[in-house]
Structures are given as C-alpha cells and as structure tokens.
Length: 238
Image (cartoon, rainbow, N blue to C red; front, side, top):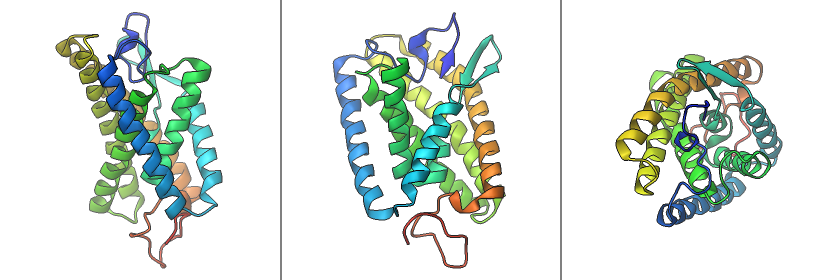
C-alpha cells in the first residue's frame, strides 16, 4: 500500500469505500466469500490443531509489520502486505484466512480500506496476494531446490514481488471498470509505484523467512502431498 500526500488514495491496494461501482463490488464479494468458505473447509480438513496458535502469531506479526513504513523514491513510502509470507508459513488456505482477518481489523479499527470494498481487498490481496503468491513461490522453490533455503528464499522473493505487482494491476482494472480513474492513468500509476513497493515486500519477506528458517524450519509450510518422513515435519497433516 502507498502513503503520500500527492498520491491519490484510491490508487493504493487497500481500496476505500466509494471507488468501486456496484457490479465490481458484488463480483469481488462473491469471490471473497467463496475463498473464505473453501479456505475454512480446507483448514478444518487438512490442518492439525497446533496450526491455530501459529495462525494467530502470524496474523499478529503481519499486522504489526504493516505499521512500519519503508521509504521509496519519489517522496512516498510503502509497507509490508504480507500475503506471500503468510502463504509460505501457513499454506494458501490458512494464509488466506489470516490475511482476511488482518484486512477486517484494518477496515474496522483503522479505516484502512473500506467496508463495502472489503470483498475487493480480500480478493486482491488474499486470493491474488496470498493464494496466488503461494503457488508462484511453490513452483519456483521446487525448481530451484525444494529442500534448501536458496529455493525458499528465491521462490518467496519472486512471489512476493509478483503478487504485489499483479494485485496492483488488478486494482487498476477494477477502478477503471468502475469509472473512477481512466485505465491508462490507473495502470501507469499503480504499476510504477508497486514495482518498487514489491521490492520492499520481497526484501522483508526474505529477511523474516531467513530468521525463521534458521531457528524454526519446521514452521515453513510443506503441503501434505510433498511432506516426507525424512524431512523436518511441519504442522500440516500428512
């Protein structure tokens, strides 16, 4: 997300109320509700009870980390979104639920993103940022080295950057379809700033994972299908 006096607030990833028309709002709500429902079902079916405390800790960490802004060129700043980080630690289903909780708290307590636009924010940063980011990370990790930190770090860095940029492009289309901002303006502004914000997202994500990998490698999510007995066991079911 962006923070700057000269930068239009509606060209940030946390979409406020009043900037999306009814059709776009309804469609994103449908996708958001479907994501939450499926995620709840998958978490109940695949995750052990010990994953619940980790979900709480992850949500608290991401929420706190989002309060810290980092400067980017142009006199503005960005902050961690955390979608890919949540996916790497918790998997796509639990990670999406954690990010949804973070978005709800931000909307109700800090007015960071609108209530009517909550569905869009869950869609953009939960479905695309967390769910999409996880599978980009997983593909790259498997290609580089599934059981090495190089694979984890490379996959997480690329996925974190990609998820932020792709989400910003989707928001640009949503705003253009709603008649809020012309598409060329929205795409240019969103892509330009979020290419740089994505770099900060990637750096913070890798730094956090580096510490976790050194101290608690079992906390990094391994899907049930890929888990094997000879590797460090994670909290996920087998």
